[in-house]
Amino acid sequence: MADVNSKTPDSATNGTPVPTVPLKNRYLAAFLAYLVPGLGHAYQGRYGKAVLYAVCIGFLFTVGMILGDGKILYWRWVNPMVEAERFCFWYFAQFFAGLAALPALIQATLTHYGMPTILWGYGADPSVDMLNGPYPRFGKLVEIGYIYTEVAGLLNLLAIFDAFEGPALRETAHEQASTDQPAPTPAEPAPAVEVSA
Amino acid sequence: MILRDIHVYWYVIPLVIAVSLVYSATRHESWRRIFGHAFRLCGMIFGVLLLATAFLLLVNSQI
Image 1 (tube, chains in turn cyan, orange):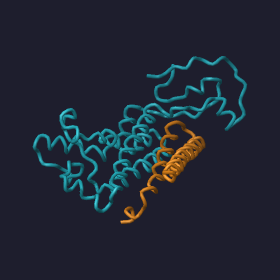
Image 2 (spheres, rainbow over the protein chains, first blue to last red):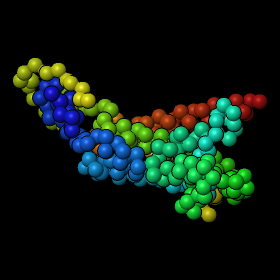
Image 3 (cartoon, rainbow over the protein chains, first blue to last red):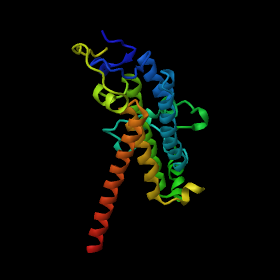
Image 4 (tube, chains in turn orange, yellow):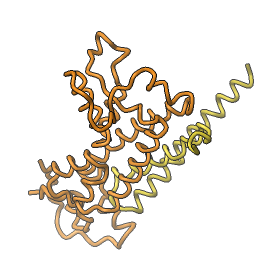
């Protein structure tokens, strides 16, 4: 029976040791990875990856927000079949950037119910003037800001899967042996690999 | 602001590097493989971008 807290399927192929990926509580890790890029991996003890995700995703999101003057992150509760031009499709990608993108959802909900916005309007639906404000200063770079924040969210989605399931490609025992150490002689037939739930 | 003075084309470099690193990190666990994969992916993306740019410039110069 495979251990649900670690992923070592390839280590079972011929007895060659492959580094264990400590997933711990994978649901909590995925949730933490969603909240803050890299936090789920830090929880799992994969600090190197945590730093890599935090730096790469955080950099893209931060630079994107700067280019958009903080006005490119918002959500509107509108029916896309009725008001397609006001529907924020791009927020589906930005949403996965985590806590930094979550206020947009909260602000839109507050606005929808006629309540005042919080957090000094961060993530609130900007007026047309505010929305067009960054363009004279940044020009087409505002569009780059949209792209950066969207890609940051999509990359964090990959990172969430990595926290939940471990790396997609695990080194086969043969590859591991050829790169790291001499291959030992298989002592017994390989057991079947179970996919843990 | 310094970001405003950077030409839009330069913004593709950190984007491609970040995408390559994060994608590779989700595929592998060993750093050697992550950086190797990221390097190859970076080269492939930049290669495709350069080819597409060269093709478009060629087409543009013939019109």
